[in-house]
Length: 342
Ligand code: UFG
Image (tube, rainbow, N blue to C red; front, side):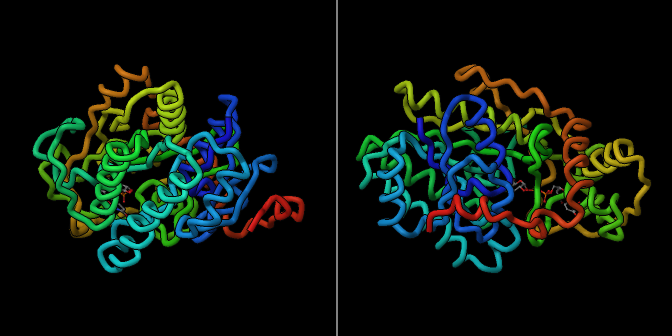
């Protein structure tokens, strides 16, 4: 079956492409390369250079490749930037998703797995966070993803467009089998920043806040291995393709680790005692975010297998060691370029 993966050249998208191939699906990557990397897409996968805003082109591609379902990652996803440039986030995320849904409707494609986020919850009233917890995003990024979830529910109600929205906690780690990993620009995520420091590419890693009401005073997060996330997308896809109804699921490991614990684990895994400095809190960071993923475990049989902190960090470390400057400097061979349709 043919699956259109918007944003398939990005970090999570490229790992899902790998898992789709392993599971016998044919992924077609649809990406505008604003943040994605051509090198993250395997040679044998069809690449389409396109924008989700381009309704006619997206519809044409869905018809040409006889697409059975869409997995939708294409989005702007930096929390800090979303606060300083909300227009970009409402345009790329909300309006872009609306355009993609219209292309799907035009092409008669009626199944979508959607990349949502734990940021839809904001500051939690209690942990672990279940899907029924209060939805009160504290940043624009979370508000745009919540708006898209609402749009999907309305499209389901009115047009029978079935979806699974997956609310990720902290995606981390890298594929142990393919040469893909986490590379944002600018980088703001804890694990890549720690590992770039261990490599000597950055001078020091900052701890944002040591006065939180947690055991060691630093923020606690739920880190989930990107390969476990990828498996959940395939389960969600199979659920929809076998006639399942729309669903919303959390994806987390259900374990919390503090910033200090992540730094200690990285020092152990890398064998490097890199410099760490303590700084003030970063605005908008909740103290503790831990998922309950009971719903997807019970309903779809999802079971995270790679999300121990050491495995998360060691797979990320293996990738970072090979890519001290990320993916952007990798030379793309001619045959790879020929895969593009634009
Ligand atoms: N942190 C530091 N120093 C750094 C960077 C981060 O101490 O240099 C801390 C943060 O304060 C936070 C933790 O490390 O407590 C994790 O920070 P990240 O930026 O890696 O991730 P966030 O938890 O802020 O955000 C993640 C995803 C978002 C998503 C959010 C959901 O990256 O896309 O979870 O709540 F929206």
